[in-house]
Image (cartoon, rainbow, N blue to C red; front, side, top):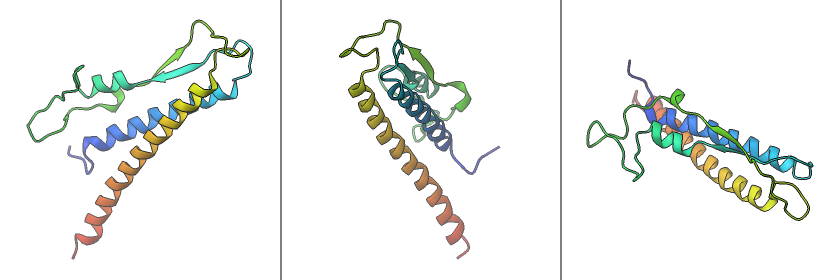
Length: 136
């Protein structure tokens, strides 16, 4: 059955979820920066996303038609992997959480999340325009 939304909206939605998970894990790392023995955790999903979208290592896209973006995407086919550091790294007397690194990851993730949220907003604005102006 055809959907009112294209597959891109499902991809964007799933990536927003993964970015939220990453933000929560980074926040947890920052909250435990002075906790003895705490090991920083990571959320990695980019490779699984590329695989789910049919991207090869060179960035080319699988297409069913030259005018299409990837046609088959199942948002349930991938998810984030939690990675726990095996060896704690001592950083100025603290355990494995590097404050500067965590803040950089958080800033980048926030920028990416906000960009994706704007894309979703534009998608819905377009649909709203079609609905409100379609009867004219």
